[in-house]
Image (tube, rainbow, N blue to C red; front, side, top):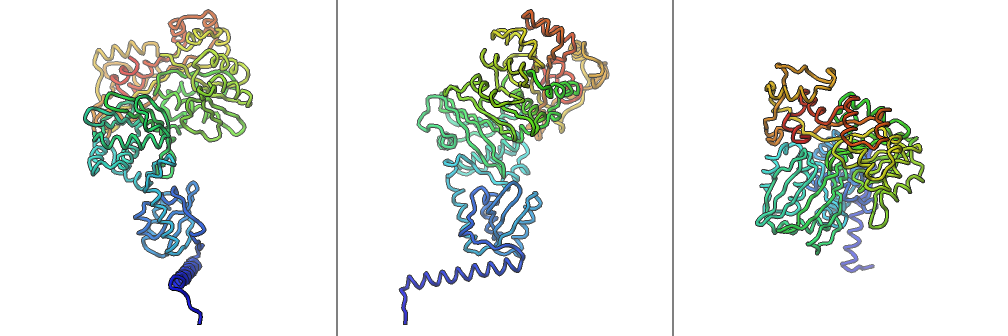
Length: 552
């Protein structure tokens, strides 16, 4: 008789049981018409399995083991299980195409162990925070204003580190915030969100937990944890549902510790068409005419946060075609655009805007976007490019459209080259839109009517949405939970567009003042920033207070 040790017998029995388990899974697969899989061979990744929370996955005896765009591979123990069917149906309703794979319970347990890698602080290594689709959907359903978000934060027990970060990011994305601010104060840390350009208080918490948050963010962004007395910049990625969102990090020392600003580079925020940005019909027509020209330069101007990047990216999206080569030079690359070659400057390594521009001109581009013309060399190459068969988009820091010409002349650019290369100079600002839930209709006061008539006196009557008289109605801000009691929700662009014509070109040759350029442009029909703002007031889009706070 052949004998085995206890250990050998146990191993043999385990192998037999496993074999029987896998054969049973194969039988169920054949019966249901699905494929069989052994997860000892086909291992799931954390991003796929994380689509469904662990407790729900275990309850439904399934696991997402593969994901490509909206196509999912899902391992199930029993295709006929009622809970399994409910979850599969929910995913189909969300637009997913499902491929079912029948697996053994041993295989499922192997898949579920991947959740441990998600729960542990592995994100510090991968540079990712994962917020599952269900959690984000719950936020979007329940967190519709700041007041509710504040209450959500107050439910945290023991100041949980992970939850503070998850709530901050999910809340920011849900409420369309552009930035998250952590501000160290004497006895507490202040958390604020920038929504529609304005900072709003969200939560105050213990400085002890803040040190952990600070270390966590530094790890994610690849920054030095031990440096606390100087500024550091970095970036990392968060996974929101099935989308990757980049976060730009800026740390600066303060009186009570380091302060953090997290800029959320949500691709959905930039994924807008040109006709969705709220431009006047005449402005949109001008843009559409000029951006399809084969050469020349279009310059956007305005302060940081005025929507220049959004508008320029909308230009690129409109002109893009597979037959065209588009290259950008940015500092940094904030959003990634499909089909477009993007490069990022690295001044510390000698890769400046000027050197990058020289390099990409050898790449045979049709359209070039230059993040900013900061110096003489960059401006010179950009203007020459516009004269030699390239369409060039760029930005300058000036207060208005007319200021772009004197600024370039101050940079020692030849006025004749400027006049020949320029197509448009566009100044842009963002004004908050009145909340549709609580805006209040009102008549203009006599003083307001007089002011609007003065501001819009040179504007053609067909540009006005209503006549200016004692019956003219506008809307005023009030405030409600929907708009976080600000009276505003969302923003819209106001622009002034300086177009080139023969008179303007001749004027530029004389190195004119900004005022001379502005005067001629207005005589030729340019709508100023303030005028565009007041036209939007008459449309009921924004308020007098808002326009005056932005453009004076």
